[in-house]
Figure 1 (cartoon, rainbow, N blue to C red):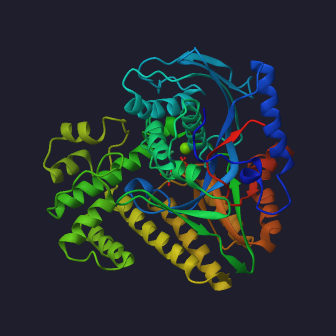
Figure 2: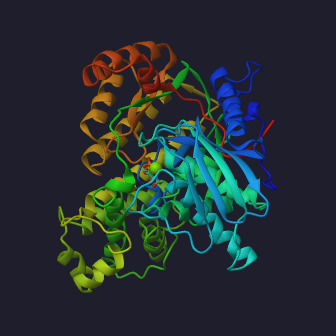
Figure 3: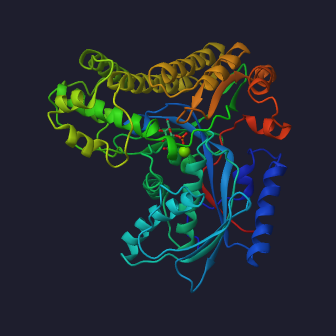
Length: 505
Ligand code: NG1
Ligand code: MG
């Protein structure tokens, strides 16, 4: 059974490193899961796999262009209590603690797992986890390998479509459960690769940040992720500060389900930045080798090749990024490009353009804003470098540095709203309310078009900011909202622990 090298205790997962123990609700939720499992399946689970949601502090919509990001896991997670069935290979019973909303499903895995994207069922994300893991298990055990049968009971408390990446938490916890059930000693890096592939099977050109944060995060640290030339994660301690600061996450309750809206939003942006990369390469008479991004060509790849040719690879990262910003400004001079415009730059037919860049996942658009999207990515990459630099300048942050970090976050929001066009009026509203009430900075976190806002603020302003949000946002938008829902709306977030297997006790 479970061979994964990262088995955590409940304390390691939910404690905060002090003696204050585990939040009662989390202790209870875990015990209830074990109890319900026993009631439903007549036996204790063999183990529980777990993977958390994440909040991205800075670096929005740059992971799929292979630039660095700075997220961290949150405490909210997906738990999968699992029983391994001997002699019933391939048979999966998939149940949820919330059975009225997510009824139990039975399925048998034999050949390739195809996730039916058209028919969006709650268990698709579990099957997505199965599909990625299975590919890797079959590479090891042969084409005909069938995974062990499993009974699983799932309990997730990451708000769905709320910007904290419930989907990555679900897919990563599922993939981990399959690996553990089949006795596979998976590394975090391999699990990450599988989960990125998995999430693409749901129909999204996923970047990789969410799965990385869900899998690799460590309690008390932010996770600095590099995607170029290979994925690498660095654990950045959260610095002490004077004044003390807090990170708050506020839900807009505008949900944007990426699996549904991707052709006009998320996947379209992936296509736009890919087209910007290949158009720039062509305009600079440069040949790019395919890279690991969804469509094979990223802006980071373009940066590397063009600066190699110009002999500038020794320059600091900041200067390299600035140089590319100038190139974008000088060469991509149209406000919007049609399919014909882009085909003519690339010297291919419109038909081939569509086949190569718009067929795997269809996109719905006639105009492609190559300059604006590329500028957002490079300028955001530049802000991530500044943010990281400010964090590491000294052991402790003072007021000036906190203001600087806040300003970087605010500039990200402006760029997301006006240049990348991935915000929405409700998110803009929350950002301005929190800033007026004393936050250093606030911005959308995750894909946007809804979801939530991450706020950096002095600890002594938390109360004022929460009050302002209740009064100026929640009670205006949702006058009938229950107290319970309101409790879910705002959380003070502490960097949490990444995926692990918890043995049933
Ligand atoms: P959400 O939609 O919040 O899970 C998405 C992508 C990330 C990243 C952000 C934008 C997936 C699973 N997640 O996050 O990789 O690109 O948008 O920075 O596709
Ligand atoms: Mg998601």
